[in-house]
Image (cartoon, rainbow, N blue to C red; front, side, top):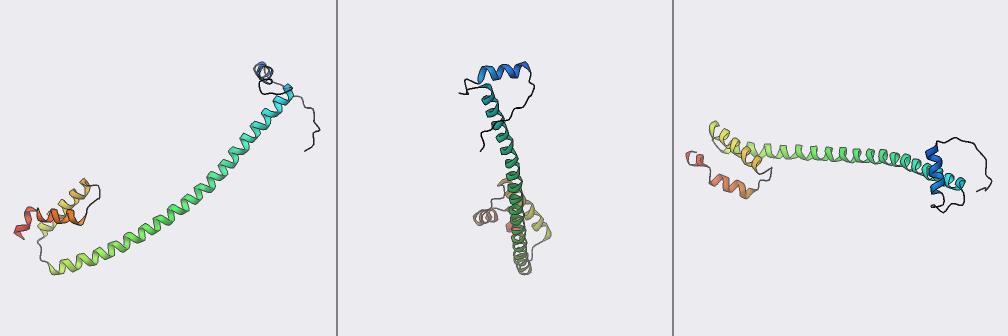
Amino acid sequence: MDDKKIQITFRMDDKTNYLIKSLYEDDNCLSQNEFIEKAINFYASYIWANKNLNMINTSLLNSLRAAIKENENRTSSNIFKLSLEMSIMMNILAKGMDLPDEYIRELRHRCYETIKKQKGKYTFEDALHDANNFDGDEEY
């Protein structure tokens, strides 16, 4: 890089002038001019870093959106497949059992409350326990 310097004139307030005069030696600068040049280069680097950060953020945001969309599609597909299999299973069970509508309503309500209470965590063992402790079982 060329060491040739150009001269410019600019105006500053008293506070800025005081800061330059009081701090340039603390920054190991030989002159106030060197201090001002370092400050401008530092601030320019800061601005460029923020611009690049915004570009990275946009790129990162787009990548995250694509990944979320792909995950959303995969999850939706899996839920659909699971719903299909559950529908088949429920139809097979319904064909083989003759349960009154009231029993099914009570069972649905009880299952809903249990799963809600357990925050969606419900195992086969939980179902066995609930089925063995359901008061309405003896009637049907």
